[in-house]
Every structure is written in C-alpha cells, then in structure tokens.
Image 1 (cartoon, rainbow, N blue to C red):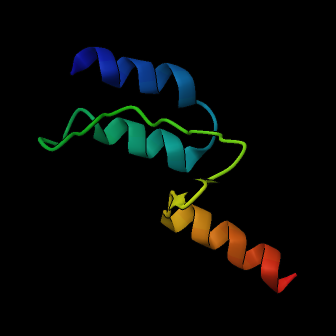
Image 2 (tube, helix red, strand yellow):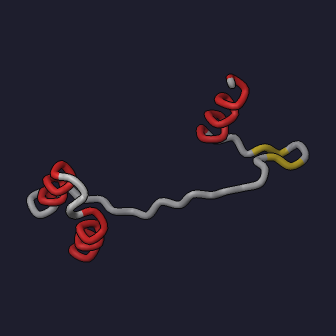
Length: 67
C-alpha cells in the first residue's frame, strides 16, 4: 500500500488545498482502497440481436434522444 499512496501523492499533490488535505489523511486512515479504472470505447454496443446494456450506454442514449 505505501507505493499506491505515493503514486497518488505524486499525481495529485499541489493541485488544491482540499486535495492536499485528503492526501494527508492517507497516513492516518486504516481504511484505504486502491484499484484501477478502465474505460472501454466501442464503435457500437449491439450486433444483431445482442446488445450490451449498461448504465453508461443508457445514460448516453437518453441524452442523445432528449437533445
């Protein structure tokens, strides 16, 4: 975990006073969770009769239909 905390400090330290305060909390908290985030970009979310339905695809379509 120390390496993950240092990665976050290196990426975000100095951005804002609020961010720096949160980064300082790393040393005092027993609860710390670090994971990666992945974003998929697809040309289409369906092929034939198969459709990938996710909250993001629904939200994106809702905005397009509303506009």
